[in-house]
Image (cartoon, rainbow, N blue to C red; front, side):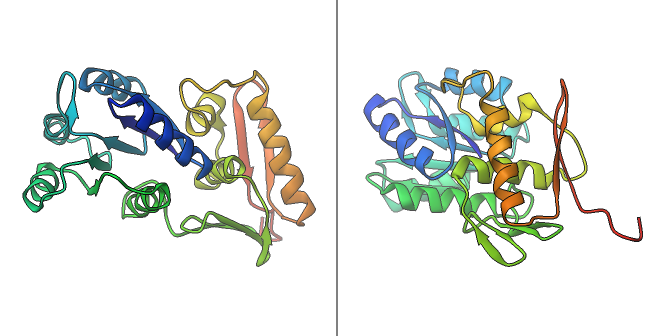
Length: 228
């Protein structure tokens, strides 16, 4: 899952990004309202993590602007303003959740997962193709009810493919979902992740196939049944 963090404290932003990266999220970071607007125009994000007091404006103005133009990206406000009136103001402006600083990364990650599980959001509860199942809340993979150890990035990759089972997912789409903008990504990083995921699933006797469409991307297919 790819998130946009808007936070003017470089130190705090670094801590948040490191913590969420360990939880399996790819996080882009900018420091201003203008930077956030630019990033949102050119990238698709699953959640916006937004501070309120920014150098060039007020975070709530960005929330209101997004909602006015019917952009329904989940917004989680991260701020030191912890008063009841502040929380009510933020939620009434159109934010989906509100977390007061200081906070612990596990709670932030849990709130992100909860937002993504809401109806119409990026995560469902369970994704199943063939004998492969992903529990998106626990980020757990099973094959025929047997747990499969997988890295957070492999889980994200599997999720992208499961959500579009039977269809080719373009390489740029997968890379955008798995890596932040400034991540140091080698030219064959995606191919290596796909290869490891294939081996992991094969070792567990998964009955799905991940096929390479050369020059385009990858597709996950359900097993072929006797009915066709």
